[in-house]
Image 1 (spheres, rainbow, N blue to C red):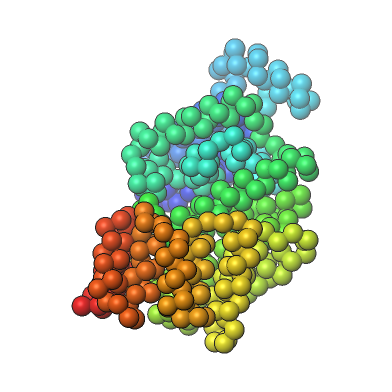
Image 2 (cartoon, one colour):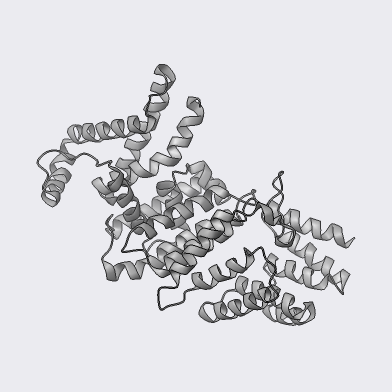
Length: 409
């Protein structure tokens, strides 16, 4: 692997580790200092490795340089050293100027703690995801802008406001106590859920799937499972949901990237290992006494990932949607429930329920109506598919809708 390929890959895997450790060391109020040191480290790697070649252990090289740059920073900044280092020494009983602890355990702990800082309830969900992509996933500003289908300036402003909020709230990079974990864990899970969904069915990117977002969400969720304080039933339920969905990622697109609907997927290409892991985490999630939306969605995903045809499949899915709507109503859940109803009771019954939703501004609504009308009213089906097409944003959704219209000609 050459330098131009290796640096971006290392940025994805190592940036998040170093930035989390440095932010923990400096404190969230000095997050820009941590970012500058890490960015300078990667810039030096680009320049040095071009001249001298790639070192035998690139990750260790980055850690060493980042550690040295941090120590140099403390020495250079006299005012900073007098004010901040004194506080650090007092808090941590340090006998000399601090340096980042880049041990495997501290890297893992720091990333988990950073997750709770970023997902503080006072920060808007969109900004939480942006910060998670930048700090915890190592995404560049360009990549985040692409994910949100906006420009770099907008993303920079959004991240700046989020960081200012972290400062204003004086949010510390630490694992909250047990009572606070319960309050803030839901915000963390919501961010990971939205991050995974953006990858699984992108509403903002030209790419129908962004597998890297799905994998990052799963990686971060696994941090929660590894820590005994955050290894809660709803965390396991979300992990089960992600595993079941991820098991079908390769089957959801053709070789050219066009979407493949569920009924047309090649079940042999489903990932058996991920399905087994999904089953494991679903069983683990049953140890609690509370059923969350993640439990129900994971159970629905379980039925979708079962290769053996079961006559009760859609009836079970329908009942799970009924429970899900009772816990947390959402228009998309209601639409999905209507599709399941069509499988159990037929299109006419489902059509009656779908029309009651009256979600005229939602392209999924018109797409569902197009599907339900296809069997008995072709003109109405075409009308709704065309309306959905005019509202769809992603290239994948547009391709699917065009395919439906072609079949109705």
